[in-house]
Length: 285
Ligand SMILES: NC(=O)c1ccc[n+]([C@@H]2O[C@H](COP(=O)([O-])OP(=O)(O)OC[C@H]3O[C@@H](n4cnc5c(N)ncnc54)[C@H](OP(=O)(O)O)[C@@H]3O)[C@@H](O)[C@H]2O)c1
Image 1 (tube, helix red, strand yellow):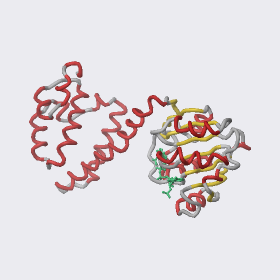
Image 2 (spheres, helix red, strand yellow):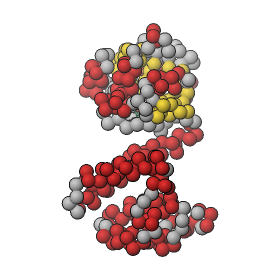
Image 3 (cartoon, helix red, strand yellow):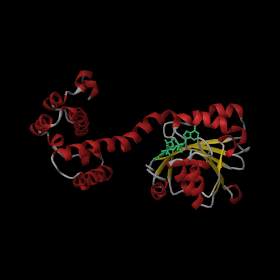
């Protein structure tokens, strides 16, 4: 994209949208407008100030923008696109950041407009705030779809783009949720159990971080250690006995996943963990 075309409008002035807009500003883009729930909503005003821009109505924000970035909650994208449509410039590129939505979300917009280019850019990274997000952009991977300029924009932000087909998006996004949210949920269980034995939660940080690193350098199966990997049923049994009943389901489910990684079948362990795979017969192995 040429220098004269480096104008972007942001719709959805939250964590991800502000992060990407800040990254684009670092690359010489100008943010021509920021649209949120309302021009005077605190998030819209804050993001507009941070992006050296101005708050605008969603119906007007796209005017003069070569790139329209849609970073609302996923469920709002379709409606927001229709509201923004009258002001979208001919030839503009409209991109959303949702991991769960593909190019299908643009269908109603493209029914009304020709000559608008569309794409999806999902950074495989967590942005708890725009400031932290900006630091996390370089080196993160990003799923891209649609217009070829999307991958170009991703690379300019320091991201590592890869193409993702709409048909694969559901499973891709589930994997992203597991890699991020479920890992965090699991650490919530660690925090609760640590509290019951008066051990600081932080004490588990080096172990957890090393385990994640091992999984990515060695592969999950090779990285697996612990009682399930060793086939130590007595220890697993003791854990289940000592755990609060409310903690047992998650423990059992993940111990079953660990057993699956070992590639071995152990009927004793299956019984202990209530392994549902037994019900699917030998083909499930
Ligand atoms: N955060 C991440 O780590 C991350 C990473 C990759 C991709 N994404 C994607 O980025 C998108 C946004 O996520 P987020 O985490 O940035 O969410 P967020 O922080 O909640 O931001 C969403 C923003 O959209 C605004 N909004 C809500 N409904 C709207 C509407 N109808 N019209 C205009 N603006 C509206 C919200 O306004 P209010 O502030 O007034 O509620 C908020 O500013 C999602 O598609 C998500 O999947 C997020």
